[in-house]
Amino acid sequence: MEYKKKRLILKLHRFIKRIIPHFLLEFKIGSSNSTQPIGCSGLDDSPIAGECEAQQITVDLPVQSKEDLTPLEVNPLDGGTKSTAPETRYFYIVDGDHSRRIAYTVSGDMHGSHVLLCLPGLLETKAAFQILHAYFLKFSGCKVISIDLPGRGESDRISKFEFYKMSLYLSDIRRFVEAIIVNDIGKPPKITVLGTSMGGVLAMYLTQLFPKNITEIVLNDIALTVNWTSLYALYKSMKHELGYRETRQLAQELQVDIKTISDVQLPGHFDLSYRADIWGMNFHEALEGYKGKVALIYGADSEICTQRRVDDAMKVIPSLSTLKVNGAGHPAPFNLIVCEFIQSEMGV
Image 1 (tube, rainbow, N blue to C red):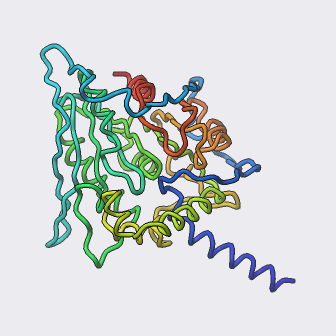
Image 2 (image 1 turned 135 degrees about the vertical axis):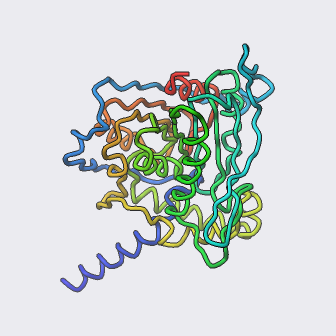
Image 3 (image 1 turned 120 degrees about the horizontal axis):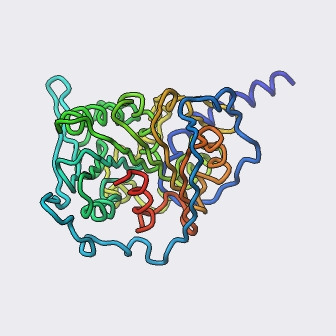
């Protein structure tokens, strides 16, 4: 009996190590939800738990959700301030004798103190935020920046001797924020970090590196906990997706380095600290000591950011502002109402 128990625990451990890298893949699938609450012992008194009441909003997703706002429909801001249309620039990461480019798109008021930094999901590119770039052109004092993580979009690939992993992304973003945002203007910037899925996880960890500059994080369909059941379903979805297409073809369609698709499936891809329990992965510790605002956008049909996970997050962060998008899965789309919600949260 004891031998069988040990074998079961070993199998569970191997299973968890296998599926952890897949929890943020951007595929819509179906999975069962946990019926057990998450234990957040001692977290209700966390510094991130504000005193103001939470704002909860629910909207329906229009049929043409991604076409209700285009760059042609947005009037640039009026007055003496010049609004810069979206343009691609490059930031160089130098490691010893080697350097590589991080591509980013910037738009809006180049001298604005409000900065919206957009971090994409696991296999997304900065192109996912083009609607936000268009929307914020009409607001003064605000600059929007979206980046391509290494090996995605227009950013350079890493060397064949390196591995794509979360700590690499976080390190690149830290260098970028220090050089391009924090030191770019005369006065301290007010940074809102918008993170989609894996980008949301990175946003949480980024608060530890820039506690004085990050005034708010906006999470797109990622809460403080992700269920193991959701991870398993996403793992199966990835295998199914690859089963019908060559990896090279998938990489071309997603505009990513083919090596990213293999590396994100390695146990070492998620190499940041987190707390695991029987129900899933918990990222509460990443927000310890953070005193800024937190907002959450989620799809009503999401298998990653379920209603139970949202309710658990509100217990930890009573001041959490939420926007529920009916008809949306994972992640939530950036339609006009979602853009307005982000703008309202930023106070611009």
